[in-house]
Image 1 (cartoon, rainbow, N blue to C red):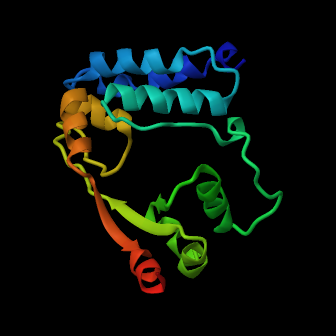
Image 2: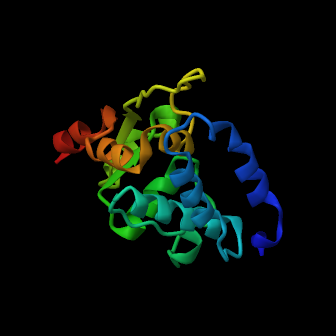
Image 3: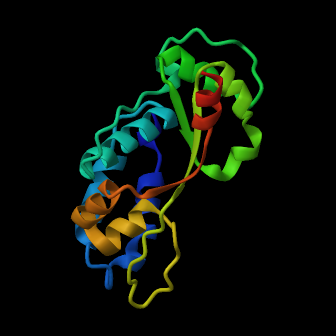
Length: 176
């Protein structure tokens, strides 16, 4: 069990720098404790549970599943960009969305041949004051919660915080 280690205390101690200045320190610290003091048996379970708790906290309605618990019929080996296509097909998804960082790894024609729309989105930056600290864009969900709080961050998340970078919708439409 991962709960038998001292990592939770180290994480909480590392957040003390927010204590005297971040307006949502107590609220955020309480939420983080709720997230990390968990009976998860593995890091994968903990990650899934934390993601589910964050989504619920921010009122984001999305289904989160661990691939290892899904019993999907997937090949043993595939090229790096094929995994997402295999998984998308196995769960019946018609669209695969990803951040743009690995865009060069994906073959849009391959996805189109498999009737999967391939989309890439870049997060719209969230900027907020951090008195006494230098603002670091995209630092972490913890930093955002410390400075803007749950309600304001939830509102921001619901205002479409992603900008399209590219999509293979035109490729599929022209082949259809």
